[in-house]
Image (cartoon, rainbow, N blue to C red; front, side):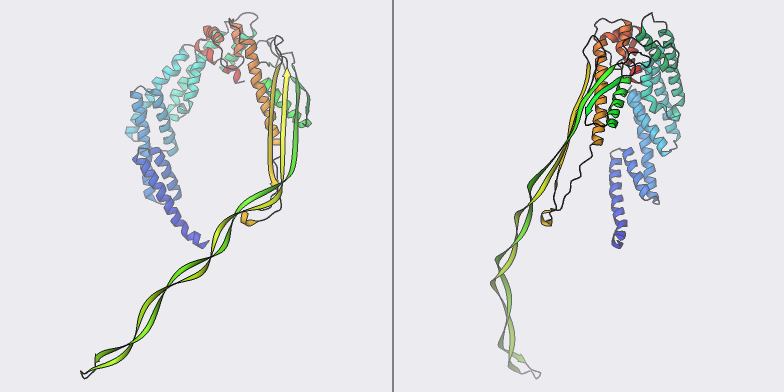
Length: 473
């Protein structure tokens, strides 16, 4: 632990150096926002290092200059949408970093806000003036992240007021486009006006609509609580569908059928696990040794008196010899370890369906879901560490969560079938009246071309967005 504590400063230094290198490389490539983000991390790690703070602040400034500069350039090129993407980036970063702008950036920002104002007057204001409130609102919603910044509050209020007033004016106009015996058109007008907080009378439920549905039947394998959960999913799907109206008197009856089962199996099996064994064997190696051998030799020398004399001295000579020895070595040999275990398995299967008649002219609507889920594992008490074999005991996942997902899935299938059934019943007529087109729009999905054409005669391009008045309910 002491050693690790001593290493921590070194490790942190290496990490910081590596991060800083990445950040500097990004900055050289002109990716100042990304580089500043890395320096943010570095400053969090070492807030006392002024050099890091200065470098980070410099990168932030360059990032703001780059974002606003790009926005101005795109604006001059007529690429208003691209300009507003970078303007949003600039405002987001300025707010996040709490940056104070100099005179040059303040001036550029004001110019860019002016360009945005002009663009939004065309994008949002023009459709609003033409009575296309839903079209204008769609663009307004898309621009809300930009308009949410405090610098844009004046533009935001102008656009919101223009859209709201357009919706109110359109509501006044649509209230006059009605006739007797057109409950679906009157429902469309009611929803349109309510969307803009305006009043329009709500008509009684059309004869094609139903009140709360009942779901009865037996599903083998489900307990009462699970059947009730299934009814809740199906009820929610039905009451979110175009077939439902709270004030309708007719009550559709749907039958439930299906089965949930669990099968378990246990088999004795023989398993093998590979491992490596080191096996000894005898080998021969050549070795070399150096031998020192003494010998005598007569040599002359001069004594202290200068006389030459002879003496016998012992010297040593060296030579090497090679010899062979036996050695024990080990080789890796692949082995398999065999052992017995129980293979346990469990399989869950579910089959669910709901069926009922909603349109007497057609056959019953049926939603079906079939699915299965299985798990298996081995159980034994064998241990053999060389092959990484240790006792195993199987713990299977309880099926409740999976079954709950399947019940919800049938609700989703039912919801889709309800919408399709409505479209098949009321959106397939080639020639449509205004009432027929409004009834088709109730599906909350994209309008077929004939229905769009009829509604666009009254609503213009807003006709394409009418289904959202139902889908949002």
